[in-house]
Length: 417
Image (cartoon, rainbow, N blue to C red; front, side, top):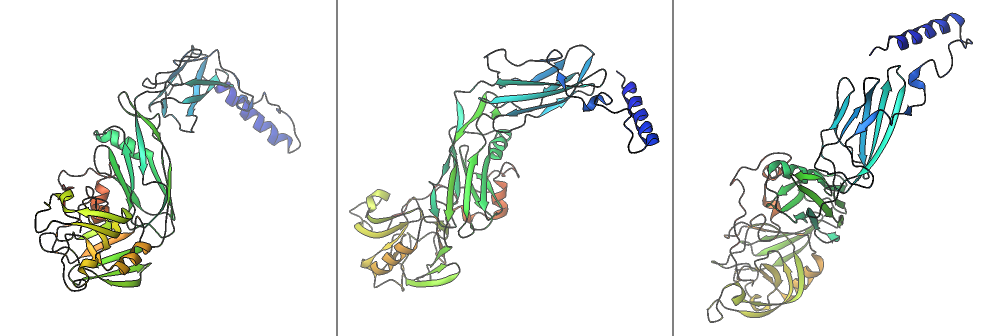
């Protein structure tokens, strides 16, 4: 197909304008350049494999658009769903065919604009619309924690309704889980398991930040016959940077707010055999009253280590029963020796102060204990104990995590006082 006549027309027009001067009107009018003409209706030239009438397209099949005969060619095709997501595609060099290279979104409404050009160079246009079939069995996502205000150590979690094991499928899922913070920080997701991801920045969150989390996974093809489902957006904010540094060897806790020391508290931590775990822990919650019994963690009530105690002002830092709480029975040892079963004990007055000044998501860091290290994921939020370079390897978008490089060891249950 040759466009020589059109080129000669444009050239002759240009020469005429130059010879007649600025005021010349020769060769004017919309018919001189077909590209400036209003597009004609290309409905009779364009063919596509989409559904007819009220039927819905199979999202698992590619979209294909062609032209009839040799009197026209495709010049451009854009396909966009109702959420503004473009469908990737490829146009043949001769303009005879366009086909999608990306997957259609399930349960979506598509608008497809097809641009053509006839043998005279005149532009044509056809707009197509169709819906894709929804899926009944999809991978849904639930974000955590609940909406609200948290300390700067609070990780974001995403729990999937189905396990995702294939690396390519994980990449699709992770790319669709969006975390935006104001101010902006560097951070990424870490695959804790086949169904759970955690997100944290390189350092703690900024103070008084706003973090918005949402999923673009709904309708997206993850794997063969597997699509993404809905996910409710999440918004949290952070407060001051509150850190409690527990020195198990020095028997004191130093509490800081935004880097400034606001209190120093004499404490007792775990005695030999029940030593408090070293490392960074994140406050999981607070309870004014907790009944702590040794039997709940495997210690017989008849044992010399057995206990059944009413505990007040209890701030939880592990799921296995480690708290910071009031321990009036050990006041004589606080600041001098470690006599607890793993918890951090202090006077009732100090515990009440701590309870009022600490919040979920704040940091409790234990140093100089002879105990084990806090595990990353199976006993609360130990995420900050993973080195940043290793954390990045937990992302399917950045690198594959080498087997065994980071192990979330099963937590050894310990008594709670």
